[in-house]
Length: 427
Image 1 (cartoon, helix red, strand yellow):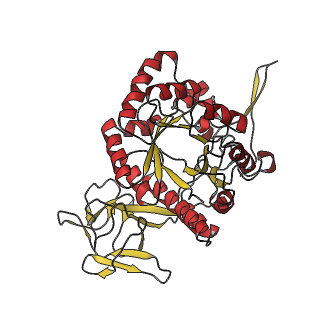
Image 2: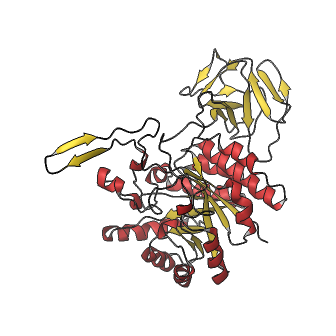
Image 3: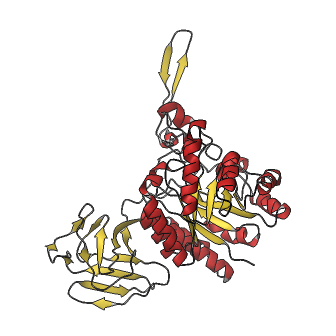
């Protein structure tokens, strides 16, 4: 049995490094407006992207380029240049949505594998066969598909790689086929500029056209007005079932525009779930505890395991985004001797150390602070003094302060320092 791939989002070069540090086998990322995440595309320059590809390949990892927008006629010549430019960087695959762009990629860059985007909405083996015949190596199936149908596609096309989303934001429409943002804001979702209008709070009105009356509808207290707001997908508790099917080749985490902490935690949690499955030690509660430390809109297991009409828990009417159970207070810099503040840090407070996979942490107790393991086997850090890299002592340090703060002892690069969020609102 081939071990399933864990595929994480890389919104920029730092997040790419974080994803690999916390257990990803591959990442997906994009440059320019031909990617469906324009904001993250702008965070990557071609030089950064080339560095990211080199960084991945040096570690035996993979990187997939998102070219999954839907181009207009006026953009096709520019698209051709973009495909050739990205192919010259030697990525491991292109993620493409439009059939015409699939064909164009095969013509211009025949040596680069093609992965079909979830935007193509493949739900059955007939559509999968069409794309296989076009030369597509992997299909990222529609988020609305059932595991039963994924198994059926694999049965008909055993050599076709199948990838599924297991975590992240969900669209209230059908795999991103929403036009609310385009109508209200002029920002087209399938061209990478969705304004996330579904996450807004709406006030409802009733109109009578005969006499032009307009009534505001009062809502029941506690029901809320986030009428389009889908909960986030979270399939961590079903990873054992998914992997046991033998039909899935890659598990994908959504979130190129999300935080570095989100990338670290989700990658770490799903890597644990995958490893535990193969070691026969699967424990869903362990992964869920980690995933709930991230900001989310409430969690749902979406549609892979249960059909939509069997569910009534996929929408969150109360709020658009909750705080996670933990807040990141800092991240360790490349020299491994300092951290940069992301929230706030005070002397003598207990802060948890959340480190990359297979990290070695030394326990110390000195003038700067203490690093120790508690009774649950979790490492913590407690600062006795907040000292900057240029030896200035502070009463505390808060986000916005760009001074590096000294650590009591070295910690691995990209280690997160986190503490419990007292304002945490659990769904």
